[in-house]
Structures are given as C-alpha cells and as structure tokens.
Amino acid sequence: MPALIDKLLSPSLKTALNVVAVPAFNDNYLWLIHDGIHAAVVDPGDAKPILAALDTHGLALAAILLTHHHADHAGGVQTLLQHFNVPVFGPAREAIAGVDTPLREGDRASIAQLGLTLTVLDAPGHTSGHIAYIAAEQHWLFCGDTLFAGGCGRLFEGSPQQMVDSLAKLSQLPGDTLVYCAHEYTMSNLRFALAVEPDNAALVARIAREQAKRDRQQPTVPSTIDLENATNPFLRYQQPTIVAALHAHGRLQQADPVAAFAALREWKNDFK
Ligand code: ZN
Ligand code: FE
Image 1 (tube, rainbow, N blue to C red):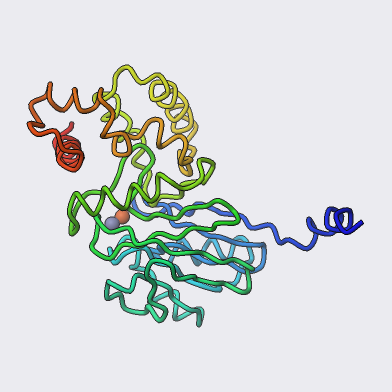
Image 2 (cartoon, rainbow, N blue to C red):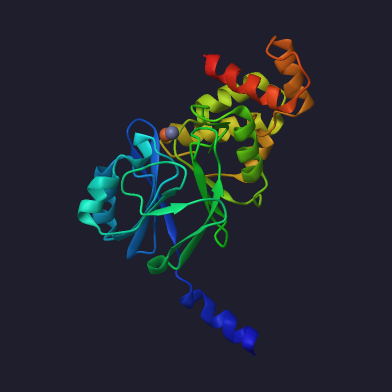
C-alpha cells in the first residue's frame, strides 16, 4: 500500500527541473536550471542573454553558481545582482566579486526554491580554485572549463597533476551523468581526439553524430560520463594506443601517466 501511494504521488510531488542552454559570446553555454517559476544560473559570463532568457520563460532568478573566476563565466554577476537579490555560490579558493557563499569539496549548495541540492568537488587545473557542481539525484555535472565534450580545459593556473586528479574524480561519476560543460568546443576537440586515436570506433561514431548536431545548429552539450570515458583522450591518456601515439609523435620519453597527460595537453595546444 505505501508503495502504491508512493507511486501515485511521487510524480506530482516532485518538481521537474529543466536545464536550458543559453548561448553567449562565441561558444559559451550559460546553464539555466529551472522549474518553470524559479531558476539558478551556472557561470553567467554575460547578464544580457540570461535576463532575456528569464524574461522569455517567465522565471525569477533564485541563485548564481560559479565554477571559476574567468570573465566569460563570472562577468555577468554584478548586473544580475542589480536585478535580483540572490545568493552567489563560488569557489572558496578564488576571489570573485559578489560571491557570498564560498564553497569547497564536500560542501553543498542548496537552492530551496528549486528543491535542488548540488554537491561540490574541487577541480583545479584550468584555474587553481576551480570547482564543479554535481546534482546527485538528477545525475548532472556542471564542470565549467575542467572537462569538455571530447576534451579538457587548458592549464592556465594549475599543474598537470592537478588536472589529472580533477578529471579522475569526474570520470568516476555514474556513467549516465550528463556533462554540462561551458563551451561548444566539441568538434575541434574530437578532430584532435581522432588524430590521437584513429582506430577508436566509438570516437569515429561520435564524430558523425556530433557533426550532424552541429549541421542542425544544435548543441553537442551535454554529453555523458560514459561517452567521455569512451572517446575523450584526456580521460584515456593511459590507454596503450594513446601512449604509443605520444611516443610515435616524439612527444613522450618517460613511462609516466602524468607526463603522458601533460604531453597530450601540449600536443592539443599545438594542434591545428
Ligand atoms: Zn575558463
Ligand atoms: Fe571559459
């Protein structure tokens, strides 16, 4: 009986949350999480498209979530705060104007209006204090510029070891976790991935699917952790075929996983 009641009531009691991509600049995605009434925004680099999207969907902003300090992720905060008096969650290890709730690994960001709780992982490498947000119940990951579809962020402030550790944490999330990264870099990432792993059948199939989405002007984001583990060279740098490719291209001398990752990241930086 309780099971039946649970079955009957749970769909109506549970608010369905949606995630909407708000494009900004050349290739950024600002993420709007909403229930039709309230919204939280992840990495609002620009306030204008967020204000427009809130208006279009009839939403009130309830929270701002930041992954790192770069302007294309945090540049819209002050303008949004002029319109909405909301909490601003952000990395404890970075100084970002407007952040009133600094977060580090294991902390939670709760947004009562959405019934949403996000847990925080430290994910340094792209920047030294970068964090990622996980919606454990929904299986969503908001990872800023750490993990990209088919790639990873550049190492602007952190070390290869830090990025290796950060990506390892993300790669171990449930395979069906949706990866909401902050840029549409997928096709250029996958072109590089194919140069690294020309014989990866999952990668070849993915490139065709993602290209078809781009041809229809659709986002390739979110992807999934399973798909990233199968096709993203920056999660696969310990695969013998990738290590062999690094050696063949004269980019790796030692047999060391972190050196392999660093060599792969440098190869991508040089890749045209
Ligand atoms: Zn960045
Ligand atoms: Fe960025």
